[in-house]
Length: 427
Ligand code: ZN
Image (cartoon, rainbow, N blue to C red; front, side, top):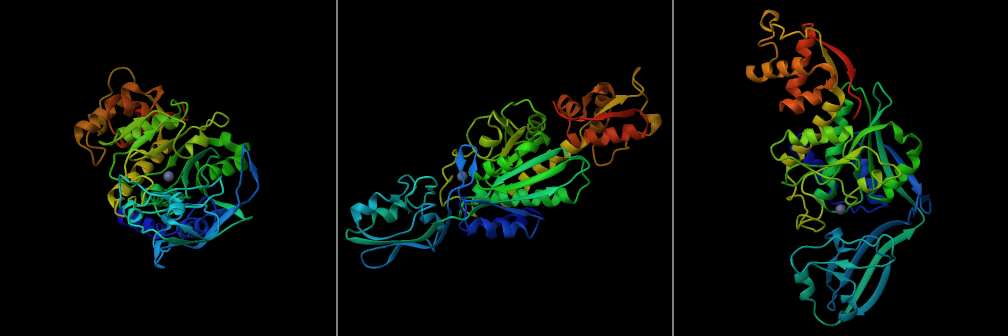
């Protein structure tokens, strides 16, 4: 998918009222399933997963606050952020003062609707622009929340793309936010497009894409897959990938895994990329990198959660995410996969002095790059290929792009100057 196609997919997902359970998640996964072979899993309410329990399933038909004159002054049909997620059903009349305790707004951004949830404490509430709240007249307000909280299930989905090896690369994205574009339709769109691309390429590793609600959904997946987590060799949590900020790689808990080496390198290849240390806060890395699992999984994000004012408000809309940002995020994910797939160690088969490249026709043998870069890449490879250094190591040390190093290695191997001694596993 290109940038406009990624944005179009995010646009289809955006209006759906998602939460940690319910039909909004199923409808969203059905849309992703048009692009991918998805296996949908349902985990019944009440199922114990580690220290948590799958909650009752939540669905909403309608919700509104009716002003004294009868107008639907806060209307779920207009924007699903108006209703606090997991609001229990309610039908009652309140004074303006009583209603105040159930309202959420942002005085600093009086036109925006905040995003609020009450997953694990039974409650209800409405979110609205502060300017609308300030203008509410005195009088009696009729409040209707036509929701259901009933035994059902939590829904998540997996797309598994088998490779030559059972070792897995894991991509994880959350699917539990309602009408918020960067958080999380951007992650769903990029993960879907990445899986489509991986499916079309030959591959060494098995790739597993998980689309699950945050926290409880990732815990359900971990619980169901606990016995085979040792297959996970690398991975990324994908989220917040559509805003105009630079790409950020957030390290795994250990910060020294193969994922970390590749993640740091991939964002380092980009002029606007940066790496940040691990922290036990954020998205599914909170669960995947908890000490009982400690998976080698980092996170790819643009602007960090909580660091931009639009975060978790109605201003995180389809205008806030850009086609070119989505495309750049997808490109970084593809490069992450490319490095994982093609990193390898070589041995210089003519290590005594520099072999003569000219007589082997190696000047100009690698297309699409400038001669200086190509020659530098070959000299670096010949110098470093003592069997211990991988292509990624050579790229890092030389400052050259991985693609140039990889192409030069192929040319040197073809000429009989390099012999492949192993795939780079990890470390
Ligand atoms: Zn969020």
